[in-house]
Amino acid sequence: MHEEYGDGAPLTNTHLFGMTQAVMFAQVLKSAGEDLTRQSLIDALETQEWRGPGLVPFSSSGDDHGGHQGVYVTQYSEGDEIELVQGARVTDRSGGSVEEIDFERLSPEELDFHD
Image 1: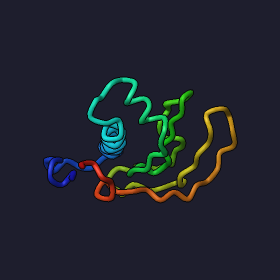
Image 2 (image 1 turned 120 degrees about the horizontal axis):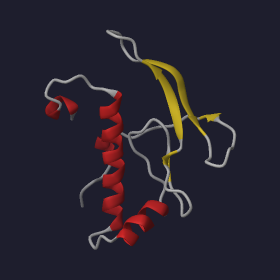
Image 3 (image 1 turned 90 degrees about the vertical axis):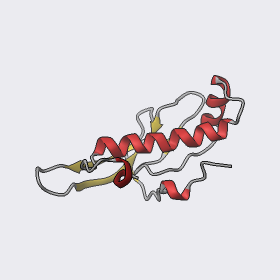
Image 4 (image 1 turned 45 degrees about the horizontal axis):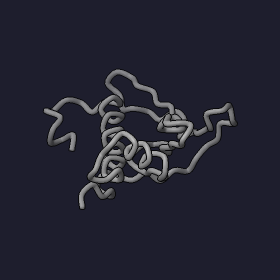
């Protein structure tokens, strides 16, 4: 997708984050149904486990709409490739332990956005 719409600009972490958020939001919008209301959007967000192109799981509940539940660490060096320093780690939002996770992400092509 970036090749088609990116106008030759380099692909950055900001682009990847934005595309990931857009994919996740599109899934929630579809799940909320045709009669979209604030409540139907919140209900859709809170009642499913969401999978998408993010490198860590996406989570939401009635008490927490925080989104991605972890991080990974990369290092950028001018003129070099992006180096993965530490793989995906997750935790809960109440101070739980930080744990490695073996997470299989989905590409946008693997997700159903249309009826």
